[in-house]
Image (cartoon, rainbow, N blue to C red):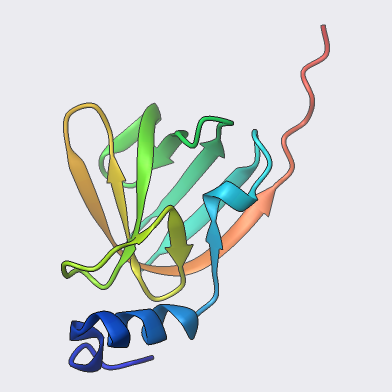
Length: 117
């Protein structure tokens, strides 16, 4: 991974994020379920067509909570908007707070079974 020092510039941050695996939420179909493991927690996201998510997991989301995944960062002032990247921190905003997670270790998608009426 790129050192924090070289990622302190916009160019360094762009190179660091280009070098890691990740996913843009905008590229996922609505109702895609993401499972993201960080160093300290596991989060489940259900992606909506509007770009918002339902998030559950970690210390702060003990039940499905409407939120916005702001993006990925190294914990500094640069943010890759709407993206989750391995080795980077997720920044999640719900109605009352902004959460910055520990670094992401793994991202996976799960199929959501269709609702039968």
